[in-house]
Image (cartoon, rainbow, N blue to C red):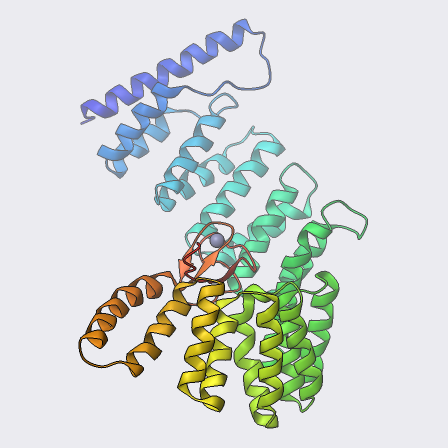
Amino acid sequence: VIDWWLYVALVVALSAGFFLGLKQASANQKKSLEPVGEYYFKGLNYLLNEESDAAIETFIRALEVNSETLETHLALGKLLRNRGEVDRAIRIHQNLLARPGITLDQAQQAQYELATDFVKSGLLDRAESLLLELVAKDGNYKVLGLGRLLEVYRDEKEWQKGLGVLQLLSGSRLSRSYDEWGPTKSHFCCELAELAIFSQDHKTARQWLRKALVYERDGFRASLLLGRLEISVGNPNKGLSILEGLLVGRHLKYASEILPHLSGAYESLGKIERYRAFLCRISELSNNPVIMIALSELILRQSGDRAAAEFVAKSVIDAPSGIGLNRLLDYYLLFTEGKTNDYLSSLKQVIGVVVDDDMHYQCDHCGFRGREMHWLCPSCKTWGSLHLKHAGIEG
Ligand SMILES: [Zn+2]
């Protein structure tokens, strides 16, 4: 029994198809196809919201596959996939591919959509073989196919294969897209370097990092890894100069990722004074609160809490920041008693909430926020777009 909504949707769809047919016949069979229209999709949406598998099947069968309805089938497939009904999208696209009489371009389009369904449902092996077939041929879907294949290798952590695809996508050094893919290539090399570091193969790690720095000169991740590698293999001075160079250069926004390695290395060399001098130099150049807090901790250790509090108070006046204010209150709580201490304590609670809420990693590209650093944004899948944002009162 076909229920009422299905009936409405079918009528709308079929009359849209009929109308389209008339229009096309009168337009002397122009190649391009008009969009099927708002009402059709409205009907379709009702159908998808209300109906069961059986109704969808009926609907698919009702629209015969030919060059006029191909776009409709593809649109339906995409709609289902976006609604998370990937199994149904797969059925539609497989159905399309099985039909005789579709052109090579149409077959490639269906193949590309089917591969996308497979990616979405986590069937990466099946997506890979379909895409390899697609990109082996020249055609309109070659570049799109390569892009999708790159996603498959990225998700499978097949970095070497991914670099092969990136080579094809970016073309020669002279091509327009070469520079555009540089940072992505650099991150793939860094992934391989990290694997080599993990298995103590420092020579291979260094090779990958050099490659990464060729693809992206002054790339932050590759430089950070190289600096850490030099420190860990017993070249601390070389490593320290690389890490310090990052803070002096254009990577100050990554201070939170650099400082732990810097302080660890200075600590093991027993050269804390040199570390303090370096941090002083950087803090004179910028008002980065992460640098300020690190420096205040060194002052605390070497010169006591009064000196640290004085330093933080001066810094907060120079460059207001939530983190700085929070830290200043910590010191004031140490130095006060009675009622004043109570007042400060409740103020500290409020500031603590604000600052804690505002300390997070954020993606420059999509705005994703999280507590952890990721090289690849978990949301928009952009490489190298996350860094620590801090609560500055000035915003
Ligand atoms: Zn993002």
